[in-house]
Image (cartoon, rainbow, N blue to C red; front, top):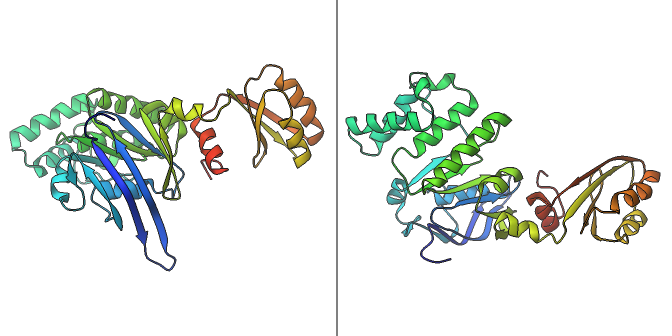
Amino acid sequence: MTGAPALSIEALAKLYPGPPEVRALQGVDLAVRPGEIFALLGPNGAGKTTTVGVCTTRVRATSGRVTLDGLDVGTDPAAVKRRIGVVTQYNTLDRACTVRENLYYHCRYFGMGGTEAGARADELLGQFRLADRAGAMAVTLSGGLAQRVQIARAIAHRPRMLFLDEPTAGLDPQSRLALWELIGELRASGLTVLLTTHYMEEADRLSDRVAIIDHGRVLVTGTPSELKQRVGAGTVVTVELERADEPLRLAIAALPSVREVQRSESGLRILADTREGLLPRLVEATVPYGLRDVSVFEPTLETVFIQLTGRDLRD
């Protein structure tokens, strides 16, 4: 990395005293570059939201240090808040206000005069394709529209960095795609974005770099393509079976081009160099075990997570 990072996280730990005692973060080290989209990918409870909470001054760390735009988050939270925008997992729009009023009063809160705040609100309504909903009450908005307004509000005061905590959780596929397009536009404008997600496709499609996190620890960091190359296989085959035993696993592991065979809830997961000539042999070997289905795909970020943890990302 050249130059100072936009966000630096060093040996970050967070302990929630018990009983039971919960170690939400256990020595997290990360650096986010200016102008990039950086994704924290992991299952629910991995520590993603706690990490964002510390970075945005809402959670006090037990130990470690976070600096944002050169400012220490722990010792100068007021200055940090002026430089960040935050969108949480939950709808925090003022339900008693219209869409435009939510934007306008946010600008006023950050010190803009009435004329400037009004102009900025109108600018955001156009940028986020919300002009036709300016007078709608926030409580009437669909999930996708509400999330769009929340992102517009979060950048209304022109922050240096935007935090998106599970931004598409609960959205329908169409709304999710629309939000992905919007996040890409923000990145193109030069805004630094850190997002948390448990959707592997979201991290793969949006992010410049990804950190896979689990049980409060960062397991690996890199570009999506770099992480998928770590799998060391060009093809992943999953076979759903009525039953599977160790002799079958060993027999499949001995087939040409097979690198690794993993047990899964529904059968087996095979990592191989190529699918050429492999599928007929797999079918022949697994039919006696009650073969139900065969799926073939390229390695994904979930494949990386499974290889690192031995379990599915959704577990």
